[in-house]
Length: 169
Image (tube, rainbow, N blue to C red; front, side, top):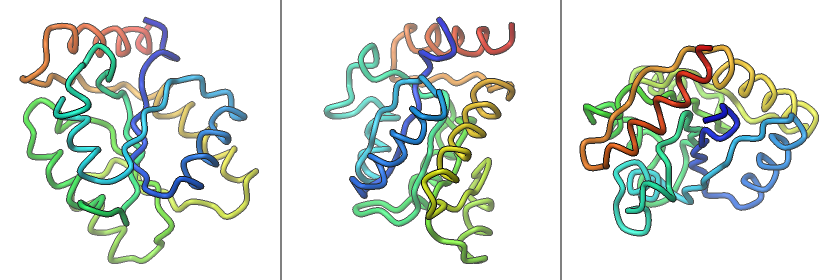
């Protein structure tokens, strides 16, 4: 599997932010498929193969999650807290991508296990540059850990392993 086939899960409730981020990643030449969870509960459902996301062949385990903090139903903090308690998913790379630059939010995100904390830039060119940096570092350079979701089939491990080996080679 080519690294550009590894999925990015974007947990973001604002449709305008989703549109801008998709566009910025496209302009930054990040070709990975992007799945969108419109709130924290959808992100949990996606990661745990529940409800509309039960088909893991269609909804692949992500190589990276971009997580907004201020979302309905479950906040990004609640998603992080849930995720880090899941034995097979707790190593998933999570980049908080939010508008809050409050020290309390930054500290809490790291305390809950975020791998990175980025504040969404207001300028579209800066968002493109951030998207390029995210793609280069987290998807190309960074060695990702092995993930395994106990409720998924062997296909899940095979998909993720293929992403990891593609990056490693």
